[in-house]
Image (cartoon, rainbow over all chains, first blue to last red; front, top):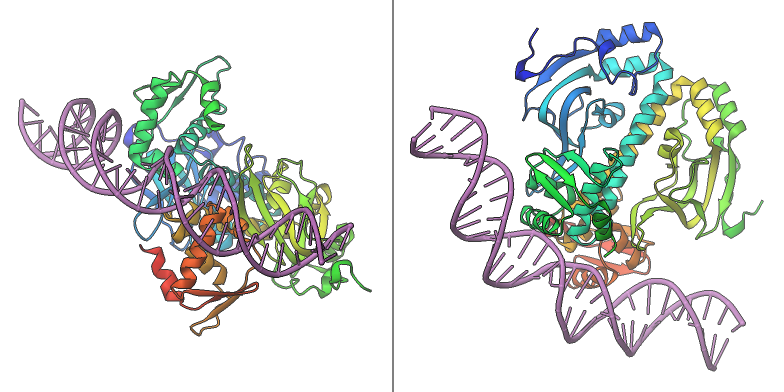
Length: 238
Length: 238
DNA sequence: CTCTGGCTGTGATGGCGGTCACGCTGCCTT
DNA sequence: AAGGCAGCGTGACCGCCATCACAGCCAGAG
């Protein structure tokens, strides 16, 4: 079976590569079965929105592959990107458990397959399977943690150069190959990066130029190569 | 019994005015009993710290009265206040459930009494009483929500005037008497307000002067009176 | 192929607000 | 009372960066 948008559909959660490390690992067999019964998979093209800020929560989405942009927009049209969600993450959890409107908008930026669980079914499942509550709480804790991290880069770094450097370093954390160079694929536009760090598009462009000139990094297509990590880090303490 | 710091100690959680509306309401009697067994109450003077950013989590604190400042500080000494916690709130929950270091520092700014539950006991309690998991998740959802709200004021409003206006309006939300005037007690210094909205102390002082001159608000001791709410709101769309 | 629209690069300009510097008040300590 | 200290008020300066404006560039659509 061919999936639309040129991606292979993951047929079952049992074969999902993220099954192990995420929300619903190590459940009892009956729980898994119940979960499967209330879960439905769908594919979304680039540009699709899973949910919109202010909507009454319909349920949670579990990302199987692809990437999703989570943002909030002010009355006058300015947008702040809170984070980019990677495969394995659960979206819409805070709104669903509190039964208050989504506080972010989720837009697909890379073709995505996601499992959806409707709100009421999800909450019932939680009530019936107390063991899962703690896992959900942990997931929420992680999400909160990343929100705080984002606040730090936006609120504490004063120069935009600092924010950008911090953003790039955060991005590369984990992908660290150990050697001097770090390679990351960066599918965001300058505009989107600007919206993540609270700056203007032009300033981001200029700073990229500056960093390239200083031999701190290099860009090849959608691949970002950090050539001098220490140098980037020194931008933080200016 | 007289409490230190001139406050009456609340003797039991059963008589706590926040018992109804918070984390552990409507538990089964045995659960309440178990909970009481692992909870210990203490009093803290102004300036005390409940926990510090980066520490291994010791457990959760449930605020009975008083107020606590939650902040994060960067390497170069800049401080960002994430929020001020009011009575009834639970502190240290994200760190405790994820078993990762506290990502904020909690400092008492008004003499406080709080109940403490050690991490391991708390987690065991959660495992034994599945019903509570959902409540914890909801609490975390709320906390996340307020973090997002804070990010909005810091990241989306461009002028500092806008941020301050938004901060004051958020502060007064709920305390709205319905009539033209809104009264709030504001125990924060200009410095602290600056740290909440990501601005400098001097700018906050100047803006307060400006707002007073425009008859938008008035300050009497630690009481803030918003005289023209609509006027303040119009600052948001400049 | 051409055209359109999104993305990137770059210059010029101007203002917001951070920083430094200092004086003032009121409160707590000695 | 005298001193010290934390918080507030205010002036001067000037650098960063948002904004506007426009010019190449590339990809995808027709």
